Amino acid sequence: MDEDTRISIGLIKKNMIFVEGGEFLMGAYLPIHAVEKPFHGSDDDASPMHTVRLSSYSIAKFKVTNREYQIYLKHNGKTLRTTHENGDPDDFRVAISSVPNLPARMDWHEAEQYCKWLAEVSKLPFALPTEAQWEYAARSRGDFVYAATNDGTLRGTNAPYTSYEWDGGPRGINVSTSGDRSDFAQLMGWPSGVMARRPPLPVDKFPPNPLGLYAMTDNGLEWVKDWYDRDYYQYSPLQDPQGPDGPVTKSYFGNGMKVQRGSEQPNHQWGGALATARSAREPEGYSREGRFYRTEITTRCVVNLPAPVL
Image 1 (cartoon, rainbow, N blue to C red):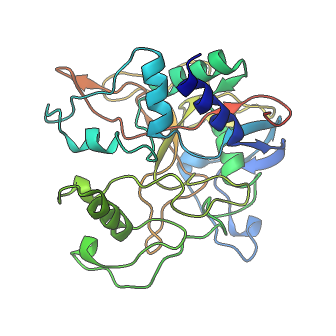
Image 2: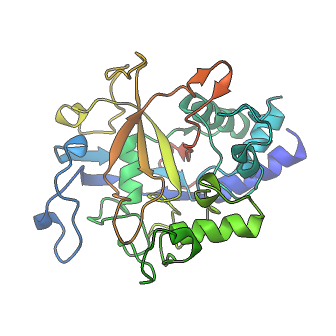
């Protein structure tokens, strides 16, 4: 193992948060379950609420960063994608992949390969989280919170939105806004335009949830292990559910769909970032003529051990 990889693996292990297993009610819940707290309400995609019992595990404090992902790519003789929607190697998406502390973008297969590689080089059982593991951690071991923020709420300044909100408007206190993203784009010297107003932010930009996990319902969607089935919660097993055994729901293109969790760009004034929200996405990057799309999602890995990672 080369020195860069050894140091990276050491930091990744250091940043794993131990989550003691237990039993919780997974899925969309009602006001009766969230006394004096915001509630999620009805969500057909995350219903019915059901009991899940999880074994203990550890989960990454941060989303996978560009720094970590590029060390993996270098170690395996891989390179970043350099062709995107317009075929321009200087595309904005390439620029954001070069900032070390931003979330790395990848499709599901790349996310799975990355976690498997961590398992190989560390000799620890790294893997993609199941969606049950993801939600249990996002909700601080199953607490009835709205979002995976420091206090379960979305908070920001009260500046009014305008049609030019990227030039002003509110800034986030515990979740990002368009204004925060515009500020970061300007700091990086990125050109103006739609994409420059929507860049990801550093993985540690806002406070973590009570378990110490950062941006689980903000700053980018996250891949999990499970195949997607809208009805899976109706037959999910009690102990350590892993999702359906194979593809169930197909996309327009006929591909099986994987579960994605979290939120890309929630907002404290109009919501989003529900800790129970789930949706489906094709695992492939979906290419046309060699050009890659749908790679704005990231991930974080787990270690499936009943004790903290040392």
